[in-house]
Image (cartoon, rainbow, N blue to C red; front, top):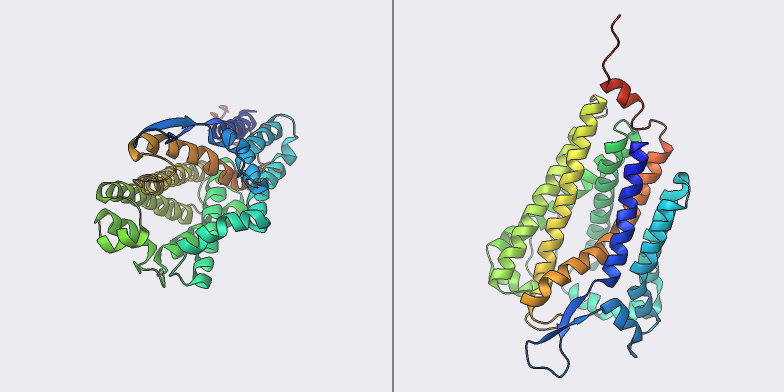
Length: 330
């Protein structure tokens, strides 16, 4: 069936991207070379053989390869009814180990403490949980209803995700040095407010402007996604609901890509650090980060969506083909 083939191809593509993310090179400063010289580094492979790499580092470096192979096996060898469960397992495993692993907590704990300094910790965690649930609901709701427009579970997840996402945009960032609501942050970045730039500590004026523009466009697309989800009622015609769900899903993907690019432009525009000169390392760093961490983040929502679609008996290509086919003349 066309629908099953399309979903299988999407999952296979996700697995291939994870493996490519594992193999993708970056540019690092050349050891012993002159200032500004860089060399190609296969980070995930070379890092495994460095003496300072502990068990936590081995897990972090190897997981995109292991997850990519697992996703490909799930798409080709696992029955479709259980494929979603496999993706959910792969998507939950890596953040679970990151949070409970003592070595990994020690490796990232100081960096997290520094980056969250000045924030109201309890309020920040609440906002982060709400933002994650909103992101998950938007993804699962829009993707699932593109296949099953009348599915009530997908509709509920989409509406809940849309409301949570809109709420998180207007909650004040209490305790932050640049105190503002998230909705105003990209506008302040575009305006190149010195207080915001100094508080975040990333980039010069040009990179702050570019990153702010990407984040602003991404935020606008995500707000559009949320509005479309709220408007895409179950009372709509199935074909109309499917079109609106597909449009909202495309807006969601576009918004995510734009926001990720904006954040990574700010991160990789640092004049010094492990990524070398920003002009040479920016593109490779952005691509690798999206292929690595972006694809890992998609495992959970894709698995949940695939599971809901598979449990819904209304297959794409059966009643929809009958609806679109010309009726026989009497």
